[in-house]
Image (cartoon, rainbow, N blue to C red; front, side):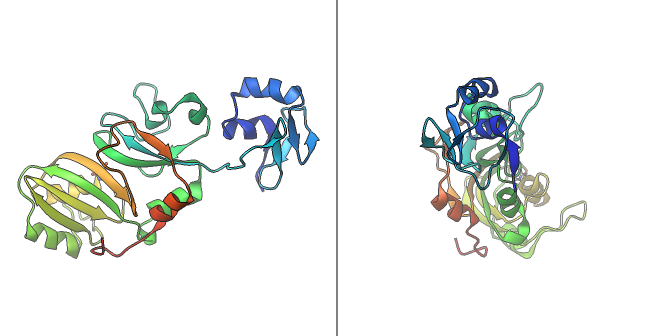
Amino acid sequence: MAVKRLDRLLSELGVASRSELRQIIRSGRVTVDGTAVTAPDAKIDADSCVLCLDGCVLCSRRLRYFVIDKPEGVLSATEDRRQNTVIDLLPPELRRLQLFPVGRLDKDTEGLLILTNDGDFAHRVISPKSGIEKLYLAGVDGEPDASDAEAFSEGLILGDGTRCMPAKLEPLGGGSCLVTVMEGKYHQVKRMLASRGKPVRHLRRLAVGALRIDDSTGPGWYRELDENDLCKVLESKTLGNR
Ligand code: URA
């Protein structure tokens, strides 16, 4: 049961700021299960009540999901005193939703990043046990080839002894390749390619599960995900079936 203060709950739903909400609630515009509640600190079971503002049922989508095309140079974090985070790229009404990034992309990595306030969903997406593939486009020094693809498919052991799960590398020519991994170890793709003597110069995540972004999006582009998108994210495939 998620019992919360009414003003906090409405703020998490992105209705208005905390201070605006106190006024809205005190004026009797909010009903809980059909009864006006005028105390901002009233305790509400967010999972079971019907919450209305001005007679309209508020979308009780407490759990929200977005995809953003993370630009290079921005942190995959919720806040930082000195540097811009992905949350800073959102408009104020979405910044109130307590979203956090699902996993991390390095500061200099760009591309698909999911933001949510659903911890269970985030855990599922990140966990290697879920078998959810993450697809990257890498630009490297050197030319990835079939021997690199074979080494990736066997499961690399990195210089420090870290054992990687089998992964997929598809050479594209021109010093670039597609890499598909199911886990998210620290600097994983960069370390895997470096271990093959192909240091990464540029890295962009293109897909998580079957949810893709393309080049038409551009840095900072975002949109809310619907149920269909979430099914795509959670779709797991065995490597090689793409
Ligand atoms: N692997 C990396 O090395 N960096 C990222 O940002 C994501 C995957």
